[in-house]
Image 1 (cartoon, rainbow, N blue to C red):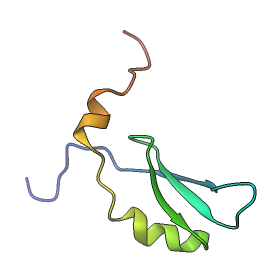
Image 2 (image 1 turned 135 degrees about the vertical axis):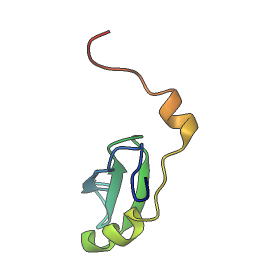
Image 3 (image 1 turned 30 degrees about the horizontal axis):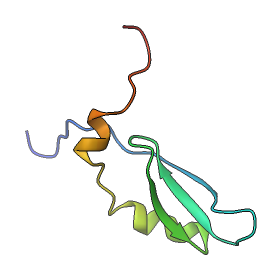
Length: 67
C-alpha cells in the first residue's frame, strides 16, 4: 500500500549539547543516536528530516518490556 511504512514515526529529543556551549543536540528516540547539532534549536528540525536509523543500530538495541 503506498504511503505506509513498517517503521514507527521517529521522535527526537532536544537538549543542550554541552554545558559550555550554546549549541543544541537532537537525539533520535528510535536508535538513540545524536543526529544533529545546531546553534539554534529551531534548525534541528530540518536536519532531523534527513535522518534514517541504521538497521545495525536497531538490530542491537536492548529489548525492553515483557519477554
